[in-house]
Image (cartoon, rainbow, N blue to C red; front, side, top):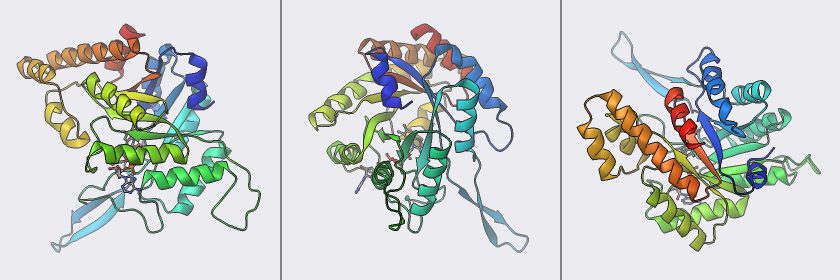
Length: 317
Ligand code: FAD
């Protein structure tokens, strides 16, 4: 079932969903352990992230560096199929522009379609480590918007090969990313909203937000989207803060601010165990307020913190 159909069927009730990362190469058991522990909350869908290959530079005995390419977390599509098979819930694979030519994107979407996966979160992806800006693949998409257009074309039976006339139309429900504190490359929020609106006009039917720690940012973002004419459901993404070093690492990596009350409490905490409790309480308070405001779904970035997410979900749902 499509993510948007789940929203419609919920009739205003707030749903819960989780995002998991493919494991570092090896066993899928970690994902199953996480999801086994979270299934009691009855998520109608689970997102699985996609990870682009990274370049590694190894020093050779000669002193020269050798460049190699490695994908640390492959398996997104297989994991989605395994999740659907094991739990009977819908899986939402993330698909990125980075590392894909348009043909490879089409092939990936054909695989998803054949597997009966009809949800996808269409993203651009970030720059590789050691690169200062995002570079698309040769003949790949530069922006998520271009991928949304390609998926919408396939939903209309239009494939890249112009000789395919009357090709089978796919039936993807397309989600896209949104940034309550604006995307870090955008000159301002208005510009960012303009391109978010373009993604929706091109065929995206819901938005999942970047994490935020201040609900005011989310509520203001929703208001700004509505004022800009973006009517799609906006799903808040929640990540509990669990360690002191995240006070610096999260803003650096995700370009989000931390409210002063949260910062003060974490700075005062005696150890990481105390920080974890503060993070859990903060995420519970955020979640309760968002749920009371009638958001369509609370989407938790699990990042392997199964017990923490369980604690939050069992208090909120
Ligand atoms: P876009 O929508 O393409 O926007 C990128 C920037 O370009 C923005 O500043 C936008 O305003 C601007 N822009 C957009 N279109 C145009 C245009 N036509 N002309 C000029 N400017 C334009 N990354 C991964 O690698 N794997 C994942 O699984 C993953 N999952 C994510 C899930 C969520 C919910 C979120 C919020 C992010 C996720 N990311 C993931 C990170 C994401 O790839 C990065 O944030 C990336 O920098 C931007 O992706 P986007 O899809 O928002 O890009």
